[in-house]
Structure formats: C-alpha cells, structure tokens
Image (cartoon, rainbow, N blue to C red):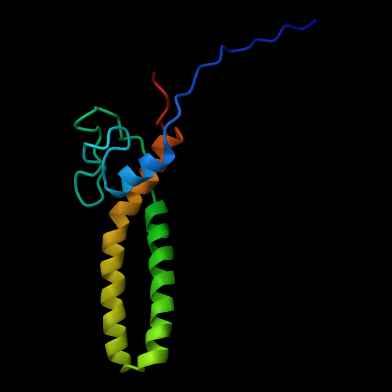
Length: 133
C-alpha cells in the first residue's frame, strides 16, 4: 500500500465579510476598524497605525475603477433618461449637469470602493492576507 503524506490541518479563523466591507467603505482598517486604510486619496497605508495589520499586499488594481464606472454609468444613464423625458432641458444644460454629477460621484465612490475591495480581500485571505495566527 502506498502511503499518503497528509499535511496537518490548520484552523482558519473566520473573518466577518460584512464587517470588513463596511470598514473598507469607511476607509478604515478591515481588521480593527480604527486605523486609516488610505494615507492619501488612493494610496493604501503599508500597515495599520492602530493594530499593525499589514495592508501593503492588497491587489485592488483596477477593480475599484471598474466598479465605479459600473455604478456611476448605471445611475447616470437612468437618471439622464428620466430627466430628459420629463423636463426636456437644453442639451448644453443637460450635459453640464450630468458631467459634473458623474465626475463628483466618481470621485466620491472611488476611494470607498477601493476600501471595499481591500476589505473583501482581507476577509477572504486573498492576495497575501494569509492567516498568520
């Protein structure tokens, strides 16, 4: 009979996904919820200043930008259609209002969605957020 080498099972500590996502939305550390996740508009801190959780190995990449485009696009297209049907504003007025609205909403959502993506990765042990305990 062939012997099988079986690695001893290590217990994985469950990380609450909802809590991590909400903390990411608030741009706080997904581990403690106290320290700042971002040190500037989109630059992620290397470690949490409160609990010393390492945050540098996140892999958010283009995910937050795609989510931002998806959300802003769907909201603005639906709103644009409704406003056009009901009020029939001048094209330049319509363009100006929706251009400013799109840029403003994008700037608001982008860092929050980056925090959500990092919180998701932390909760699911993705991208280097392995269990060290």
